[in-house]
Image (cartoon, rainbow, N blue to C red; front, side, top):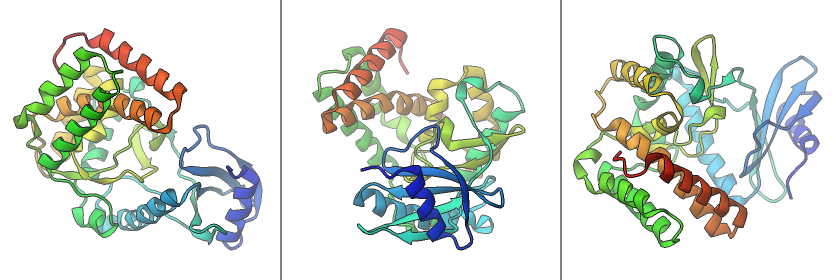
Length: 306
């Protein structure tokens, strides 16, 4: 059963010595694997408390905390933005722990609001470059996945096969995706440290700068295109070009020329993961939502190649 915001505030009090809550609220976008609340204390400081709902989420949280410790050391990671830095934790009766970190200021970055040019789009490109240049060892030490390019392509192929077996994916989309997946030349990339779950709420901006990134549970060493997927399907084409241009200049290693193609593919395949989630959990509402989005995508792209 989900914990209430008031229970989470009590856990924050136990986790951080001297924290005295005066207000608490749930985030605008609730988590699926965690109970989350934002707590304000008597010194006008804001805190985020996260509590895993299941043992699997608790195990993922432990890996995420090890990763965040490495990323927060900017002399080692080279990140150009802030990440959550835990201030305390408290053990839970059923096992695992609730973790509290200072609230990171900034507004969510909605891709549709990006404009081309040297402003926020370029700043985002540089921020992503700093992330993708993080040493692989930081992810390896956290016990998170590390993939080679060929292995990652095979995972994508398996994902499409599973989605096809549901019978819900339009045939034209399957053909569109398979052409890219079967072209081995498009998958000769250098694996990078990726966030793995970039959406508007996970990227914080202020004054045309990226100031923070949240929710690192899906981080891994994999295809750098994954972190451009939300932009490839949600941003104006010229704005995406500005992001990629700044990204390419800032990266220590020049990105491959098929980066944006794989980013568009990854963005479209997110719909198959949503579909498979609904099928696996037997959630008819999720399946219906995913099927409608796949139909809309099919109508939009038709037989156009990626």
